[in-house]
Amino acid sequence: MEVRLDRAKSLIREVKDYPKTGIVFKDITPVLKDADAFSSVIEGMAENLSEAEFDYVAGIEARGFILGAALADRMGKGFIPIRKKGKLPYSTISKDYALEYGNATIEMHKDAISKGSRVILVDDLLATGGTAKAAAELISEAGGEVICIMFMVELESLRGRGQLGSNRVISLMKY
Ligand code: AMP
Image (cartoon, rainbow, N blue to C red; front, side, top):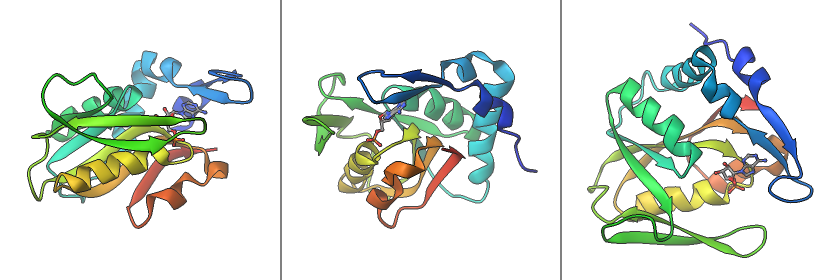
């Protein structure tokens, strides 16, 4: 059964020039607020994983937490947060990556992943792919195996998929 995502897609709000001039921000909060639309997104992700064998869902701060945690619960798996620098309380491992202007760092607890753990990585949106690439590298360096990288939205013109190498990449809605 194919999950119907047209309604959820129609609820995504485009905010021009946020957070800076020239960016059209895809605001998913109206989707999250709508119980049926939110559920269809999580169901769409779950459906793509029906054959996958994995141990954890890892979500990227912040909207990747919302989708990733709901997906983890739906699949009966644990959730691992990947956060911006300085937010996790215990010892961390980290990865620097380049943004359009400047750099950023993401972190994960050093004991979040045990060797051989099979992980689904989730974020709300794939743009240039830099964030997801860094997160996937962090999981691999910790000894985990990235089974699939899952997004609600993909901005195809930015070719982020190309950054993600041989990883299996799934997005539910494309622009
Ligand atoms: P990137 O590393 O370029 O793939 O950017 C992905 C991250 O930035 C994700 O966590 C997105 O939530 C956020 N992001 C980038 N571009 C947009 C956009 N146009 N609308 C909403 N979020 C975006």
